[in-house]
Image (cartoon, rainbow, N blue to C red; front, top):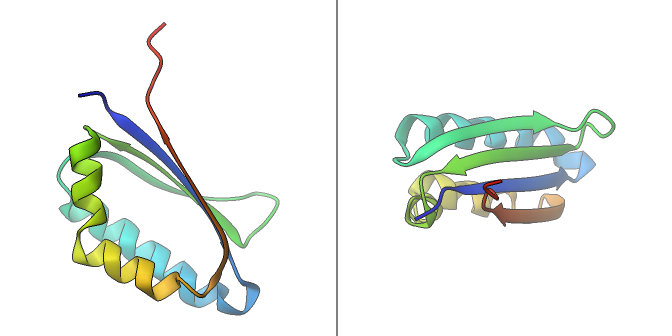
Amino acid sequence: MSQVVVVAKIKIKEEFYLEVYKELLLVYKYTLANDEGCLQYDLHNDIDDKHTFAFVETWENQDALDAHAKTDHFMDFVKSISDKIEDLKINRLIKIEI
């Protein structure tokens, strides 16, 4: 199976910025420490919009990504931010070998 790259872009509602930012840091910390098959899990802040963040992730394969989506820390994260974000866009990618 091929590695899977995920780019997850999250725009936080202004009034929930600090609360969701803390949740982003928690899911980042727990994912890096606990999720097997996680090769990269980086959190970025948009230079032009402080309310927009992006995770850039690399997973060994789709099974590892699926397992991550079922972890308690990830499900808690999704539940905690669901009504506090303006937009969420997730792209799953595979590298083109040239």
